[in-house]
Image 1 (cartoon, rainbow, N blue to C red):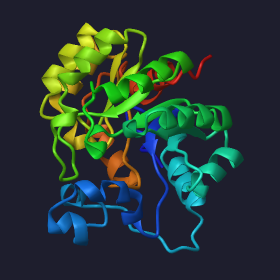
Image 2 (image 1 turned 180 degrees about the horizontal axis):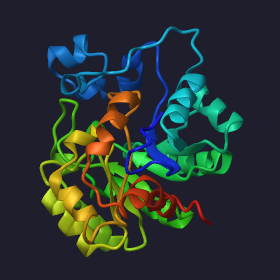
Image 3 (image 1 turned 30 degrees about the vertical axis):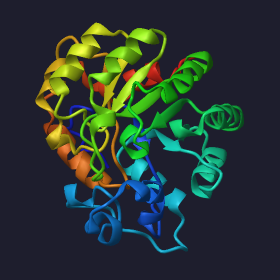
Image 4 (image 1 turned 45 degrees about the vertical axis):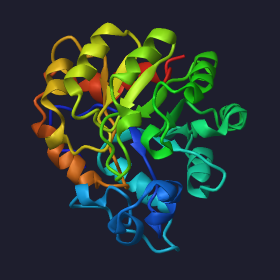
Length: 293
């Protein structure tokens, strides 16, 4: 349960990055195998960025109801809605969206190497599950943010009027960082002024540049995924407390690398102004995900 004295008490929180526990976390990241070279990543880690985290949620037994586990965490910490990735081979996500449509929002992960198959996949998932956002991991696919392979995806997101959440900055997994240089976002925002683009996973070490670009481009946003609140970058906190109150939105990293106990234990110490908390935890997500339509 959230601390009743916390500055965000009573806000119906929206978490824009939640997953479901797995019996074998490694299976989720098999798509990275062709790009991994070091022994730890290939043979020892249960997930590719394991070296960065100290309190990784435990893997679960096969007979555990993973949807119930996630709902319990949401309820204990006052999270009203969670955005989850949906795929046909992830029955937990499909069941959560079917049985609890008031609690779960669908997103779909896209591989830019798929050409028109990826576009057809996006359209199919949007029609079947009502996805509210696309997501992608440029370093995971080794395709730069501004590569021509991404342009059809960006165009289709504009056409469907959904945002795209894109990992930016040095990636946690030990793969080359070049595809996620924050400077590449500038060209995308210029070419697609109608596209709502959300940076994921920190944008470090280019957070000052990320802030500069958010000042420049109206439809560019930042989410706090994959970082414990005590490690939120100071440039992002300062921006949210000044000109960027409408541009920074909360995302966790449960259960990939952070427990909800860790996230919400840290959160009250984040020095946001009182008026920033509802925007950060709820209102900006509602705007970006078009939840008020």
